[in-house]
Length: 90
Image (tube, rainbow, N blue to C red; front, side, top):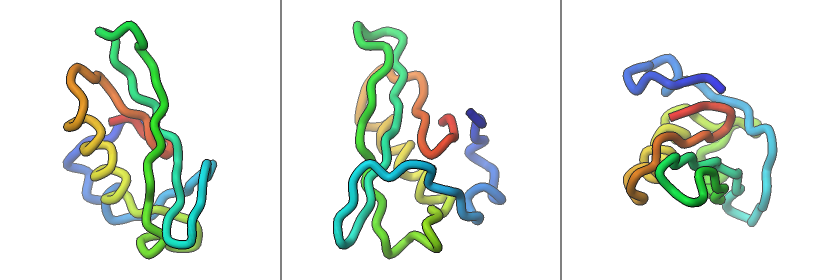
């Protein structure tokens, strides 16, 4: 996994491959994010992250959207140490 620097504008401005789509609707695709919380009884768990198709380009997702979704996961759950999404660590 590549650890992402939150100040990396090149990452935010470029598009990244979606390796596996877990679910799909007319308007969005879902990918799996792995959440790591070493202080929990379940140190690793998976959650679905929905990405709007309107933001994708040729099956690729913009870095800013990956970063925003990972930040949202980290904000909404206490004690998490890391989120792994689309091959990147946050």
